[in-house]
Length: 108
Image (tube, rainbow, N blue to C red):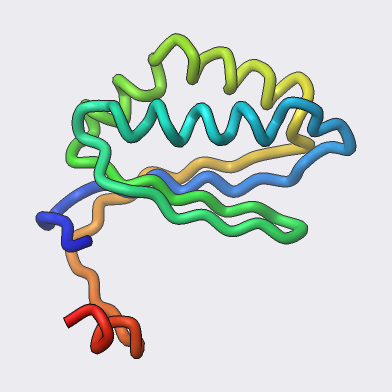
């Protein structure tokens, strides 16, 4: 999916605690809700020992609105109290992007 430049990326890096009961369900719920938010552009995620989720947004305003969304606030609180040993968030402005890969040829 090509995004209009510039846009913003929220990089969420985390380490789970031993207790992740309910986490997977909440994670799926947050992804579904994020897709409904004005300004949401997409999401990439990977998890091994450390998880990295990058969400893409049209504006800083859209990011602020997502951070204040009621269900997202609940997920943030549970994350701090239950699911994460730690997390780190970075918000970046994306001014340039490029790709390489066979998947690009297959889609054209």
